[in-house]
Image (cartoon, rainbow, N blue to C red; front, side, top):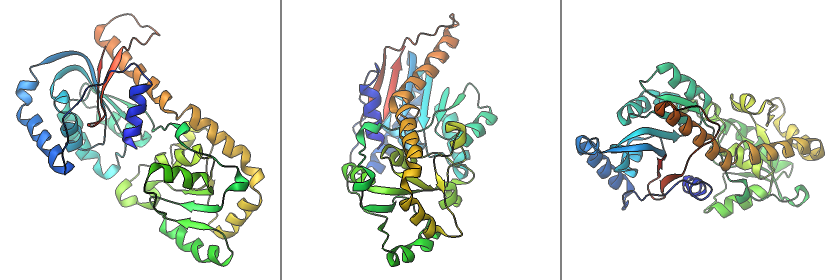
Length: 333
């Protein structure tokens, strides 16, 4: 998924592409090797000064950032920008050490709660901004409701309590409930979502509180279901109302969850407006092109601050360099 996201950013912007290290198998070994080289050669690499900014769209882990972007994050760029997701509360301290070690100047996080936390940490010379996850909706499909054969779909991270409440009764009442299907490719995932009427969506803070802590964020599963014109059932993440100013999810009626499913399937027309509103939002606010524009704006604003030049509405961004294999973006401004 990150690869497709990087490809979109590279092909729908003026960002330039640069190749990072060649990763060999197993990736755990190769990323650790390049991380070791980055650490060992830091005094030499740090003496090489580059104008402009370097940007990485990456996972929030040390070996991924330093290993897959070598040698660029070792060089002394004027601005080091980093966008990432999956920054959960139990890992805040470890991630903060990474941000400080990498000397990140512009930190962009997909979660509102994580953004608030790291703003309060006041890391020296590090701006922190909230930039939610995004997708390319054109990659997803949407069959007419009457042609969909799956009544309710639960894929990815499961909510076991909800599954236990509905599984047996769905079989009894002949509700086609598909739980944890295997999607070997993205095309299979897109077809599966396009064939589902309801899609179960709960935040990680509900399904896996031990790993998420208090972070309740709008993840890819919500956006993918919205782009596929499924009706979302479950629980909205805490930040949903801040982003959307409405609830995109039909919240579970725990007193009669299967009765609620029957009602939603029977009265589907009453929820078409919500489905279409969700579809419109994901094509606007959560489209990858909106992500590109947001990142460009933040990077350009920081560059203006550094240059102490006059404020301008123009975004003079000639290019970002993207390492498709290593997940590194380097921007010359």
